[in-house]
Every structure is written in C-alpha cells, then in structure tokens.
Length: 106
Image 1: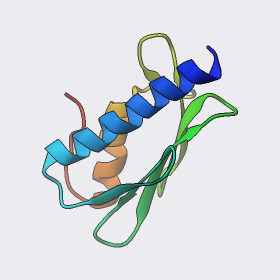
Image 2 (image 1 turned 90 degrees about the vertical axis):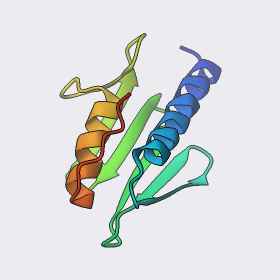
Image 3 (image 1 turned 180 degrees about the vertical axis):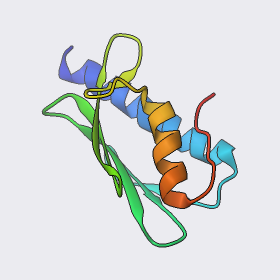
C-alpha cells in the first residue's frame, strides 16, 4: 500500500473512532490534537492516544494497559500481536481505563 492509501484508511479509522465515541454517550473528553492524533481523556485525567504511524503504516494505541499496533489486513485494522480488531480492542481498552462499559463497535 502506498502512503496516500494508508493515510486515507488511517484517517477514516480515526474518524470512525471519534464518531463511535460520540454515539456511545460516554462522558469522556476526546479531540484530534494534531494531524493523525486522537486523544481520549478519562474522568481521572488519564489519557488514551490513538495515532496514525506513517513510517510503520500502522495505527498505534497507547493506554495504561500498554501499547498496541494495528495493521490493515485488507478488510480491517488488526492488532499485530493478538489479531483483535481495532474497534473491539478500543471498546475493551477504553472501558477498562474509564471504569465503565463503553462499546465502540457498530
């Protein structure tokens, strides 16, 4: 995949995450803080960062539970170690860190 294709797919994924957060009705603060970087802030002040990593052509997630890398497999963004889909993983990660059940899938 070339850089343009990657950026288009990654930016769409970040917008999908933003939209899912909005639809979830959660009280989390979130914002695109720079090009390709989404910051999610929990009520305790902790943050989850979801960003486009151009050099590796991956989406990276940094959270209390660790760092995770997602690569496009042709149909969805899959964790490079555990093969969990991005939105399902983010639902779990955000729920754990926020201390409430949050679904970003669907």
